[in-house]
Amino acid sequence: MPIVVRAAHSFEDVRTMVGPKRPDASVCFCLSHRLPAKQNRALVGPARGEYVRSLCESTIAPGVLAYDGDDVVGWAGVAPRSETSFARSTKIPHLDDLPVWSVWCLRVRPGHRGEGITASLLDGAIDFARTNGAPVLEGYPSDNGADRIDLTMAFVGSRTMFERAGFVYAGPTSSLSGGFPRVIMRYDLR
Image (tube, helix red, strand yellow):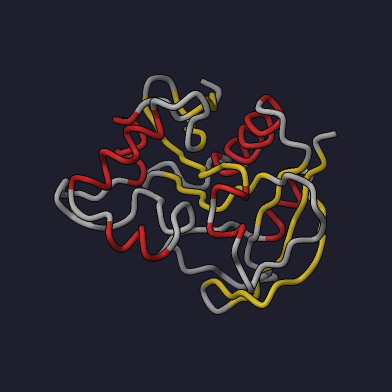
């Protein structure tokens, strides 16, 4: 069965992919790049889930989800850059004044890795951004060459993965992820 990618309007499926195991935990939900640091630290316990629930109920979802049949198997955080910490980043420069969208977190459920789901997520992120009027979609993956990336923390993707999805190298950053430099990859949607 082919992987289907849809806007992340299902809070339960978002929680399955990026929510903490305990509802009172004050971690993840893919909020560290969505919110200013002070607001992210202040949003604790169940309030984090409620915040994400409100995002899922918004007209524009907080990202996309990949499904294998009825099972959610992947997540990508996607939003206008202006609504993320990338809007204020001193390490990831703005290349121009276009109202860029960003894709910053790719997550695949254990047991489904190595099945091409991240490629489907990037294709879905492109379609999602285009449908919502974005002129350009940017990603900020690791430029790790052939070296393996530690997946312990959030996965920002690899340059090669973004190139295979049709993104082009647009410039360097002074940011690191997993010890590797991050680069700006762009997909023109115009």
